[in-house]
Amino acid sequence: MPSKVCPASEDDHETFVEIRKRRRVLVYERCPDRPSTATVFFYHGAGGTYKQFKCQIAHFVAQGYRVVSYDMFGHGRSHVTAAEQHLFTFEQYCYDALSLSDRYANDNKNILVGHSYGTSLCTLLYNERRRKVQKLVLISGGGPYALAPEKLSIFSLPTALLSCFKPVLIKVFRKVCFHSSPATVSLSDAELLSIEMAFLKFVMKGQRWDDGDEAYHALITCPVLLLLGKHDNFISLTDEISMNLILPSSVLHVLDGGHMLPIECSDEVNELISSFLTNDIETHSRLHATTICKKPVKDEGSVSRTTEV
Image (cartoon, rainbow, N blue to C red; front, side, top):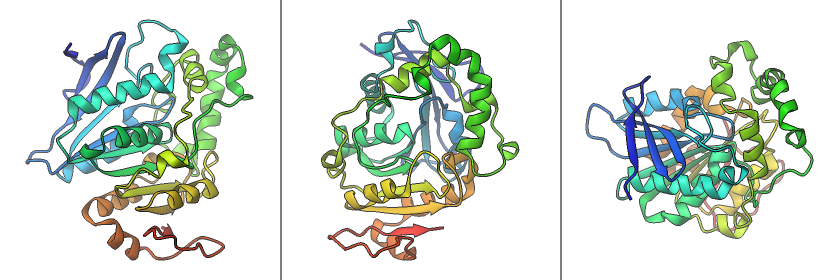
């Protein structure tokens, strides 16, 4: 059954798409003025919105790429018809991502860019649709480990209490997720945490993916660019290096920022991704040979490098 589409009101490039039953999301699609060389897909993290990639979207459209992104179900302006916990699991978000990929992807020229939670979606999409994916960019994604909800976290609190605390949580979020001064971040509170607390609680409790272990990540053979903020309070350098070592064709760059690199270090992120897309992984790795590892890492046949920008 074909997806139902109706135009969105705020932007000519936005469209509401019913990708599956009870799943209606806001999709952003923009083509360059000239024929595009490939399509770049952007996948935001839990609690976010596609607008967190607005600097990357503008940059890559100007570079001649077709761009596709969306607000995940329950996020931003995507609709929720029923607030039921089973609708917010990682499995359901994977089905959404696969449906969108099947609808918008080119035959074989697609680049997947994910941030935080979105990196796991990119990993699954590659293994499910590998013939269509050229390269991956995983930003602030962490190690090659299976997803599991935290047993003790703030999301264990009652929903009503979480909702009351949302203004406070947004202030804390700004301080924790950005290395630079929160006042310098040009993102509204609604864009920074674009989800109702009840839905975010469902998302965090539903982030279970037992298959996403080291063996699963080792199946990724395409070139992969890994980006991490030196001051990321959620993802450790040790975990990111573990991901770098498990992926046979990956390169890792550490930037002087926090968790929200697409916003905080937008120019550097754009430059690194642009270089990655126009060079093969071996050349890209040799261009950045300065290691930040405290100990030498034994070469196991990988062309990876851990580098600092």
